[in-house]
Image (tube, rainbow, N blue to C red; front, side, top):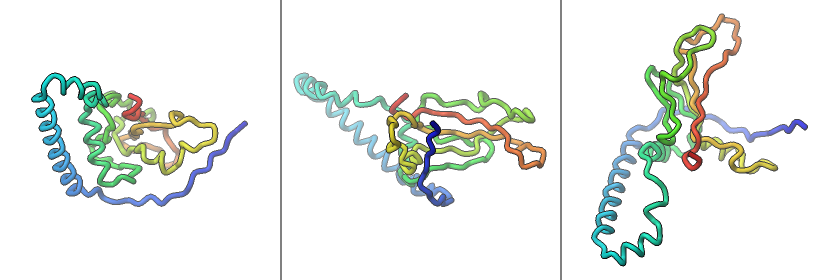
Length: 180
């Protein structure tokens, strides 16, 4: 039985990214990292019994530190409803969600039509899943549809024969940071 899905409609608003706001968030994050270092220093100065009690709470092992995820979170918190990121400048790359499962530019396969290199053009962020309400699909599990980012690479020559025919491009799936 074919199941038809219906998605809510949304307007896509195209805006330049506010990098000054991002830079302010980076400064805030640097301050928070400093506070974390202070906390770690305080923990080291505790007596063994107090350290054992803290260790029993297992705060230190909640998650491994991933600086790539930190950068992703800091960048996205400026515009948390952002669903697509477009950047086709030569040498641009996706905003990765984690340090795992990234693809190198040289590993992206060339265009199947003309053989030219493919370049990063845009990415679909995991926030779109929230807006499409995929967790609410009847009979679905939350893990059925999930990603950290979907990075789309297109032909650098924008090849085609003028027939307005669609050509296959390349998409790279990076799992969400919780499932890596």
